[in-house]
Image (tube, rainbow, N blue to C red; front, top):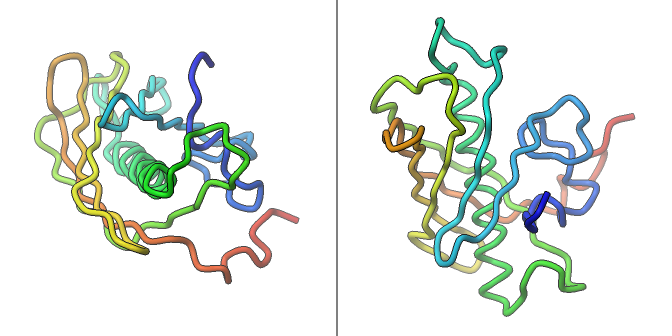
Length: 161
C-alpha cells in the first residue's frame, strides 16, 4: 500500500479484528488514514459481499463503519497527543461503545466504497465519529459512532491460540 494506515500500527494483541486486523488472514483488512482533517477508509467489495444481485450486504457496511470509526478514534487520540503515524509511541486502540447506521440508499456492488469521517467530539477517553459511505458520487449510508479507549483487561488472551 502507498499510504500509512492506523491499522498498520496497532499492537499485535489488538490486530486480530476480522474487519481491520492485519494479523487476521481471513479478514477484510480495512485501512483508515487521515485525509487532511477527515478520515478515510476505502474498500472494494467482492461478489461474496452481495445481499441481492447488484447490491452490498448491509452487515459489511456496518463492519466497515465500525472499523473506520475505531481507526478514526485512534488517529484522533494519537494526533491530540502530538504524534503522527510512524512515531515510536504506540498507537492507542479503541473499541466501539455505540454504532448507529442509517442506510439511505441501496449500496451498489461494483464501485469502491469510500467512508469519510470527521471527529465530532474528543474527550479524555471517548471520541464521537460521524461518517458517510459513498459509492462513486452516491451517498448510501451515514453513521454516528461512540468509541472509547480499549480497557487493559482486553489484552488478556486477545490473540488466537
